Image (tube, rainbow, N blue to C red; front, top):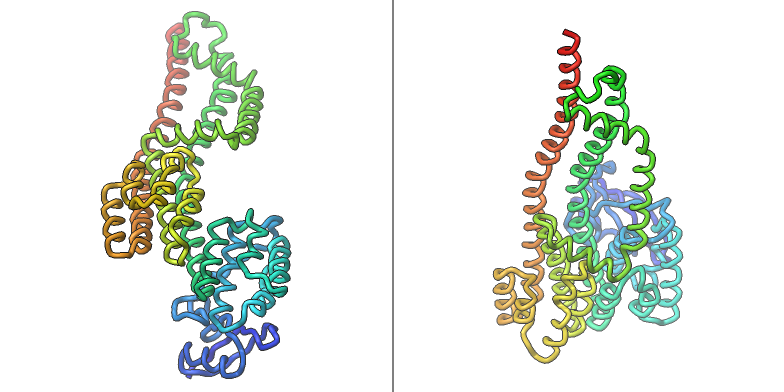
Length: 415
């Protein structure tokens, strides 16, 4: 027998905790259900995090995320809400009771307010999809339509579980891309700051040594001294211009024409463009596959999936996909003409259409695109990191060489 600690909801919706001695996780779960308790978490032993198990699944428990202190609800809060609601519904709680139980589980005040409003609508008889539609800016069309499909098919708990997986995978993919770009960004920032300090502080220290040399100084030394003077005298102006440029870009980057221009330029970049293309393909394929798997009709699923694409250039190339599929053309043929999917992905989708497994094939395509994104990131970092390091070394080496040439010239004149 092993000791299991648990958190569960009782028939009144209150969260209770305790411990029970049972042979395994499944026995502990059944024991709690016989006691009229709906398990939320079951933990083996003394609370070892590695031993946590979901009460509704034999898989390892999800990581518990804390969103306290955030003023606005975001994607992380939606993921937390979805994961826990799916868990409570799988445990056998009715929807209204599950929404009520979640009252004590959400730390974010804004998300708690949203939950309360959704709960009131559900308690008044509104379907969950209708209540969520009033907060479409937070949940999005994809979320609302999948929930509606789950309600119609009587599989709301399964659909919420799939939504949670979708949100988690999208978050993981986005995080992996951002994490991969952090090191090059830091290296670039350090490079710029190092050159700035070298020119603005170190180089001016040698001006007194070269003051009497005049035109006898080597040309590289004269150039470096002039650059040092410019940075020392007008460096503050450069900082102001940089901050102003960033602020201006943050303001105008959402303007449709500016965003369209930026998206075109991004796709034209040698490595980053390929990365963005594969990332957007993964997002589109996973979204469409998940919607189809949840029972959303394809003519409704396609525009929702296209709307999840962040790059305007890519979404524009797929603008007529919905209309052509609505007219009866195969999805694979329309996507092939968009030019945004590889031949292998198109062939996989054709097989899926022939076998009636388009949803599964789209999810497989998304997995392949995820792997391609990781591969592009690794390949890009393999090239970018040495280029940045070599560039920084070259610039600093050139500055130091120019100073040494000046010092040698002074010594020659002294001799």
